[in-house]
Image (spheres, rainbow, N blue to C red):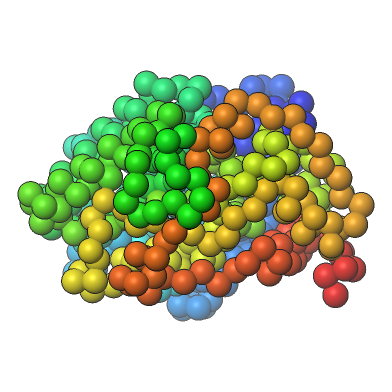
Amino acid sequence: MQGCRKPCRRFFPYLVPEFSGAVPKAGIAHYCQELVSFTILTKKLEKKRKDRFDGKERSFETASGSTANQMKTKNMILITGANGQIGSVLTGALRDRHGTDAVLASDIRRPMTSDGPFEILDVLYASRLRELVEKYGITQIYHLAAILSAKGEQHPQQAWDINMRGLFNVLEMARDFNLRLFFPSSIAVFGPTTPRLQTPQDTITQPTTVYGISKIAGENWCQYYFLKYGVDVRSVRYPGIIGYQSLPGGGTTDYAVEIFHEAVKGNSYTCFLKEDASLPMLYMDDAIRGTLELMEAPAARIRIRTSYNMAGLSFTPAEVTRAIQQYVPGFSVGYEPDFRQQIAESWPSSIDDSAAREDWGWKPEYDLDNMTRDMLSHLADHYLVKLPELG
């Protein structure tokens, strides 16, 4: 997190499985203390989901034997990169919708807690992926394993390898086993030559980051597998995702999550973007709902097999600061732009998502004010803080 010198505040790989590395020994103790409150919140959310199904506490590490055999008789969903910012929330939403046993979470590390089936999976190993697809009778894959924009610029070859080879492996499984596939793209596919205001669905895509290059290549490969092999692949171009449920994962829009945490904790915040850097954003609740709506829509309504533009709201760091200050009056923000500012300047400031609205009924529910209230309310509960201005 910007402005903190302690290693644990940099969101280490245990929380961000897309990026490999080790936690420095000097930061382990403080790092663990920072995770305690997040663990408490996670357990509360998981208990609610467990109670919804059978009211009993159940724990799965690796489903095997009779459990796996039973799962083969029903529709099964595999999530790769399930420990990440979106994956951790999407896993819970899918289990709420389909049942705990019907969703297999996977990642390169075990999560701190789990209320359903989980398997270790590195998407670079096609044989392991095939093993899980066959073992559990997988019918759908949500492929979320990736290295994001900021981390990708620090490790470009690794980012390309994971983002592309992992996608190829998943596409081949979808082809061989007739699976429905979700591939998350990003506004990173756009570049400095793209129209920045109300960026249209079909426009110039000349990204300047390895993450964006991998995503636009992935979009075209997804369309290729649909046209040549009939793979039912669906995709959206996520903007910056904001949510209280999980920590960000090494992207250029991470500030929009970090800023809320620091405000609720009573700290000031140093932003790594300029105060007037406007970017498209989407609240996590909208992102998850929209993803599920896309995947559940009739195939005949999905006209675009590269990726749909998807937008919720756009704001600058200064605008979200003012929104927070309505409820946290003493909150202050400073600005020290770093390499991520250049990335942000190559992206759109607003998105035209009319194709998604027309084809499968996409419509966001959160604007800046009700998103701000909801974020602050949940984080105040999480940190055991009272914010009188929330009412």
